[in-house]
Image (tube, rainbow, N blue to C red; front, side):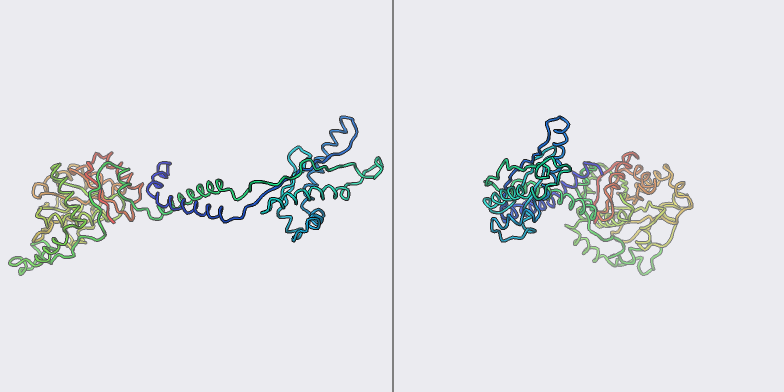
Length: 459
């Protein structure tokens, strides 16, 4: 993903980021207020070695003093130094416990030993630091290496430790540091919130109106819930062509009329009613007769939306024909319970006419032109001129022709139908369609010259 994709996710999931940041800041504040203050006192000891006045001896003596300073800085936190400190100050601690609060170090290229002591009592920290410096000085004589030659009366190399900077009582605690803790909490909370937002986005993958608005200027006409508007609620007289109906159903009363009226009344105010209202407004505004419904993903959401929209338009008194343009993976014929027949493939191959292949149902129900039997070579059947002629012919007999097209990212048939129809509705399944599929489908439709009427989000 690019940087703008991450920024978009953070903007969409800003509540998660803000919540995580607030929680981290609150935790940092509670810790800063509840943690006991810690004061650090520091004393400094200078190490010197007595050598001759020659330049070579001075250089070697300084290098030797540096190595001794590093050695004695490690000794400062050992029992040989800390046990006398505990006895001198009467501390209720062991050497191991006291060593956790004593840190001795030697700066680079230096013969200084800096002794730092951390305690909750500033005065006690200063006393311990000064005592450690004094006891380290006293312990030097026991730890001095013997000289290789008896040049000195004591037989030891002349090394001296001198306390040059006694520890002063610290006036301000070194921890907790409220400002630093809050800054750390802010950074940690924002990072955790951002990671949570990215994780939730990758797990959910749902596309919403904001994703569509960033990908195209076409409006979102409706957001539909689940369910297929297929044969449910239709009587047998609405599932079969009139020539296949039993004689007792060809005339007389129309079964299912009351159920259709009830369904139409229940539909008012629903999501499909909003889709039909928006579609009718755009159809009248642009004078559309043929509209292709193209899925952005690889599912059958376009078939479900096309069927529901066709039924809703038919109930409103609109003469509508529903065409299954996916001859490779036909769906509508089987879901409407239609028998096998020539369908779209037979009409395009010249084996039948659209008037014969269309299944007309009684009452206010849409007519359906199924895909028919799968041809041996679908790419040659769906020729540009033949498809255009089929749409022109059917558009003269119906108020509107809805064409369910295959996904444009799977086969080129979807792009051909979208470019041939007067306009296109892009159907996005929020559960399975990825944002990359949405973007690529929009780009493909644009390159094919399709007229995008709007987007329908299907859950």
